[in-house]
Image: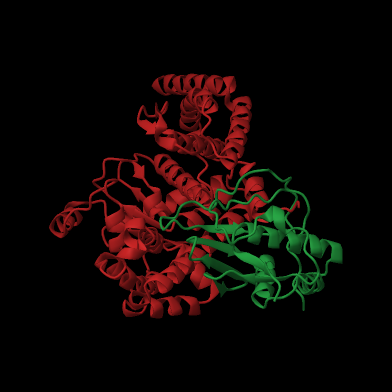
Amino acid sequence: MSPKPPWPPEPPPLPEPSAAGADLGIRTWVETVRKTLASSGEVRASHSGERPSRESAAQSAPFQPQTLFEALLGVKSIEIDHEVVISDFLQDKHFRLNGTAAFIWRMVLRTASFEEIVKEFARTFRLPREKGEEVTAAFLLDMIDKGLVVRTTH
Amino acid sequence: MMLQDAFQSHISFCLRSGFFPEEDSLKSGFLLEEVWRNRQATLLAFAGKLQHDAPEVYEKTGFATSLSAFRELSGPQRREFTEYPPFRIWLNRAIRPQSCAAQNYPPNTDLASRLAGFGRLLESFGQCRRNTHALRIGRRSVEVARFDIDPLIREAVPPSYDFPDEAKQQKMSAGSIYTLQFFFQVVTVALQRICVGWPAAYRDFPRFVRMIIHLPDAEFRSCSADRYSGVILLSSIDESLLDLEESLIHEFGHQILYNVMELDPLIVDAAKRTFRLPWSGQVRDLYGYFHAFYIYILLVRYLERSEESRRRDERRCLRRIAEIMSGLRVALPDLQANGSFTPRGRILFTALEQQIHELEIRHGDSSKRKVKACRKQACSREELAAE
């Protein structure tokens, strides 16, 4: 049986930076990167480091259906329960993904195309395709902006 | 692209009501769920980093084996372990920069011993769950101890309190009529009274307070700190059950904020300025002032429930409410004037401002009148008794 998408109760969104990634001492974050399916509310990128090989979010949208994604070198992930902890050893930053985000992440690890991710995501979470595309694109942009994912052609 | 970040919205939604105990436990449940998952993720991220930077240390210290044991625990057991106070202390110390700078891994024996200590914690956690000296509240328990505590807690508590050496401990135990068993019974009664006055606070208490350490010779009424969160220290200074209830609620409030602050610092540049607390006259930075502000609102909310549920304590509750309210009136403009809140800190502060307005309506002039009326009543009772 497919899992139901998690909906937040009803709070109006607030434009605020994520401070959850407090410095934990090893110049490391564990940031909650939770993505759900409701609209509105801005996801702020809190990535501050720059690496020349990485794309900026502004360059990367929109994605073509055949666009492929993969995790960058030095980025590893570990699964626990339904969540994923991603470690970027080059930036020394760590992120925590909830179940919904983890679903997309697993597809990224398989170097899936944008079309495949959207299709599978919408099917699993029983979403209209447009909504699935919106959520998937937003998540991937965020991951690209945080320097965890890169678009690839092969 | 616009998208809702559930975590941000949920936590902001919770903060908007001030994060006080409520009939449904959704908010505290959400907070604690986020906190434990963050701690677990921190542990795994730390382990991943260690394995990447220093694979030998990772393996040879036994950390890898212990981590596997941790991962094999069930979800509820892992959660309980991440809420186990010695683990929180261990985690905060393990990820300290001086312990973890990648270059220092191999020669850093301190880190090696700390890593080896993780296995010991897993074992002591198992023993702790079998501890009989624990208050049972629903399905949860709060450990009650005096000097028989985990070495990590013993190390983290000073300068709040310096534990005496073994000889002095024995002397104190032998010479004190205030036994741990007696303290256990008194705390049990105090918590039962909290249950009557504010069932939601009673229900949430063991979710935030995991251990009470009784220190008969301590010079404070109660104490806690975020470096050993989940643990509260109580002395023997409280003169009445109501005082003890106040101490328990006070420290419970600190624990709520420590957990909130694990997700968001609420305040930035807290040490920039100091303030004299209007309730005690003690000097605190903004962090301490904000904690006190939140806790005294929590206390008024508790005392007004006690006043309603126990006629015998009415006068004392009203007097205490009046004292606290006068302090809150001083604190409010001080905190309003500072711009050091994070966006979420600002949300919480706005919720607390609203709470004060509501308390003013309930306890503003009327609380002063009630106190006067109570005093009059007491005088006339005494006069009648004299006649």
